[in-house]
Image (cartoon, rainbow, N blue to C red; front, side):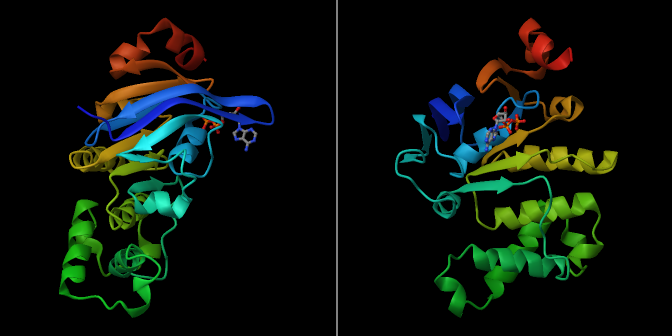
Amino acid sequence: MSSLLEVSGVCVTFDGFRAINNLSFQIGPAELRAVIGPNGAGKTTFMDIVTGKTRPDAGRVLFGEKSISLLRRSEAEIARIGVGRKFQRPTVFEDQSVADNLMTALKAARGPWKVLFWRPGPADHARVLELADQVGLAAHLARKSGELSHGQKQWLEIGMLLAQEPRLLLVDEPAAGMTLAEREQTTAMLVDLAKTRAVVVVEHDMEFVRRLNCKVTVLHEGSVLAEGSIDHVTADPQVVEVYLGR
Ligand code: ADP
């Protein structure tokens, strides 16, 4: 399988401190991957590199055929070529309905120039329904987003990201603060989304990672310490020492 994202030999230094140290990482076009590691392992910096927020001082990042690291692309440009990032805290428009939030996201996905003259048509209303359905909110389209539960707001934000049709979705601790039922629904949603795009989940919660039932990459001191199934990595003595044994 050829990879969608290829990070090779990437280094990032902050004031002389190597936060990312010769990191190499690949993900396929329709793959679900969990990235774990102790605090300070470099997980956030890794996402910052892939979204163009942080520039590597060495190495290269390829997304599809395009280079993220060499051409000095802006974060907006990287988002347009297909990288979507879901931060931990949902940032939905609380006064708007679920449908309006999704429509706003569809509008924004048109790019800055087309937005001015854009009016939603039947295809856009159908797309809103489809997005709501993908994130389990089809029954809540008319509800004000501010009235949704924490988990539902997280899903709405994922739906808004999907409006951009990302080929890679980076999701930071999606299950944090969710009820058990919401966590189960989130697991199923992420597994489903990864059938047609790459999904990288950065997560602390090992039980949640186990349920994702996907390949796991363990980061430590800015490099890959171990990679494989959850059972494989949790049996690795080095992983136990740096992460699980704490
Ligand atoms: P994680 O998300 O796994 O907790 P981070 O990527 O946030 O790890 O951080 C990796 C390392 O880089 C940490 O030691 C952190 O203190 C350091 N770091 C991250 N961002 C900066 C920054 N802007 N300036 C200095 N050090 C930073």
